Length: 140
Image (cartoon, rainbow, N blue to C red; front, side):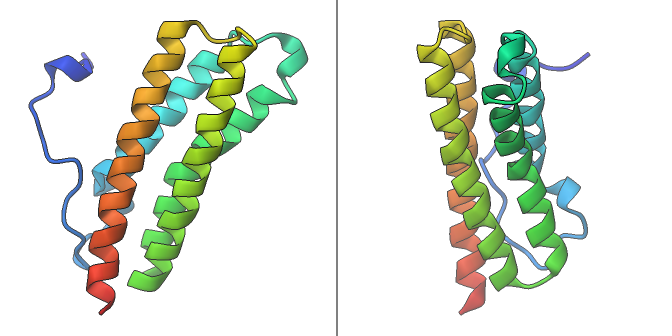
């Protein structure tokens, strides 16, 4: 049974960057990115069919881009490449944030759904920013 966010024990938002990480799958920021993408897919499944190649597609691509860029940057094996990929992930989060707002205005998303996605985007943005600082600190 999956735990709801309120059931989780408080944990730090992001672990300190370490070159000893063996897989991107161990990164909480990547795990939360995948969870955000899943939530976006679920939310956009209820969008009008006329948006299939518009807002639905744009939101899904932006959401999937976040964990994909984290994984790609991690796999490249250098702090500089990882930092660059984290900046791209941050850009995708800003793009997704904009799409959520447009969907809210178009009334494709209920207020509670949009608010939940907003919270996830904010949390993930904070995690990416913290990890980015940690990675940049290792580049010196």
